Image (cartoon, rainbow, N blue to C red; front, side, top):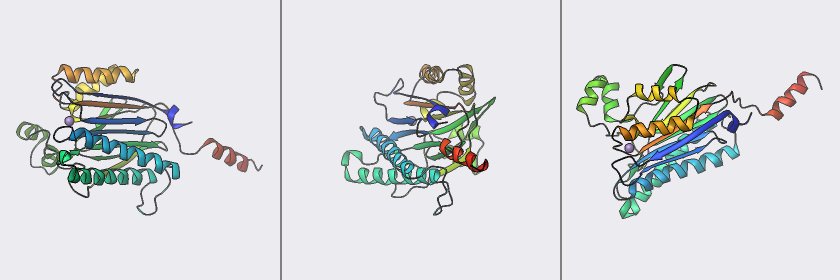
Length: 277
Ligand SMILES: [Mn+2]
């Protein structure tokens, strides 16, 4: 079973109701099992430059890295899977590229971007992220946020200073505490978990989750879960109907069937060996 037939993906990015430009960048490649959202920030055009660099550098490195070795192979230098190590390195390289561009092109001074990249392989996924773009998962009735925002609100909650309600009431919502392009090095959070048939993954920029509660996102996903194109279109439509204050990006990925790493030729050989032929 190839990855392209085990995964279904839909990709939406919309400027919203208040902004003239769309500084988000997105990419999907179901055959590679790859999806990414980046939410750029900065002066005139710089935000979209930063997010576009993040997505193109990461996607290129993932494509090249997977051509060399399969994602499920062990990376003996890091103890991670090759896929996880590849995602982390790609985002670090994208950071350096953006940082250098920001410091050499005057019109790009101060630009930055979030990065959220997901890679599916061997019945699991790896998510790598920096900033406040989010990965959610709908599994049956259970809808949860998989990533933890690198934002002032989340830091205050994680450290126990404020409850989530207090933090949301008293703290600027969109202050990210980590982004690509700000410093020469960046810490990338990575997480690897099993992916199950029926799971729906949602990658989004804050233009979605600032305009819709998690419960409304969950209800919309469940209502339209039979059709990812419809579900994604509805999420963008509701974010815009609720004000559309920011660019809104939504990627949906559904696991249609199991996708173990073993290829069919490998199983054939294994079958023959077991039968003694
Ligand atoms: Mn945004």
